[in-house]
Length: 331
Ligand code: SF4
Figure 1 (cartoon, rainbow, N blue to C red):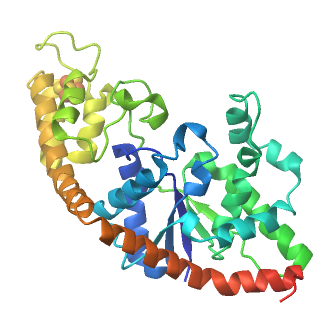
Figure 2: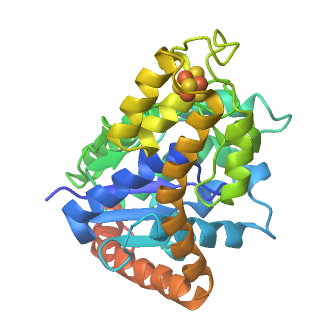
Figure 3: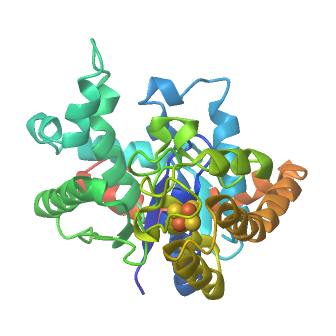
């Protein structure tokens, strides 16, 4: 059976782009592969980014990311869900891989180059980021890695590191493959400027745990078809982000009603947005209620993370023993 690994950044509350792009996929894969699906909140990776690693907030962000995923339907009893820093073997394997990886290969990584350009003095953790990511995946001999297409180069490096280790020390690791969520749609930002992204700030995003009245304020102000100036002008739903959101949140009848109503000026934009808000509420309200229940029971969340770390370490332990033995460390 394939073994799935995915790292989740503890950077701010997830938005609907994360939810439809990744989190729902985690739930599906979890149902398919059970305890062979490992999901890890990557707090060790987070400290490579000073903007996301305020020590007063990091633990809370890690906790919140667990709450958001559990509320979105990921059952910690069915999958292995844990915090990266609770499994120290990630760092141990990362060091072994560090010693196998040429600096030049890491300096070629596009994400490194983009991020390093923002620093006067580049932290070496930023350079080593993809090595730690390779360790995250290979520590469990995972062969299936659901990622966004921005991670393709890092997965290729992981495969290269696996090949190098196997060449130096004997066949040990599989060469994992990236799997892209084919069903995932590109969710536009609510400000109308490109893809929804945390890096563009809250004005661009709709958080899955954001209060519903705050979501409504954003939708009310969101741009629509710019050609539709008056209520009596017919519009084109294909160029309107509100229609993109309808496809995520509304049922088929509503989508068809909006499609025809927009093109014939049978529905106004405010009413169209109100209809969308009904779908958003039906979708997010129960999720937000589950999140509230989880927050009211922090011990449940902490115990689930602790249990997840134990399960992860049980999988990692024989693999690390094998690595230590092959590298030649004294037993
Ligand atoms: Fe967009 Fe709806 Fe207005 Fe058409 S009616 S332009 S889909 S908000």
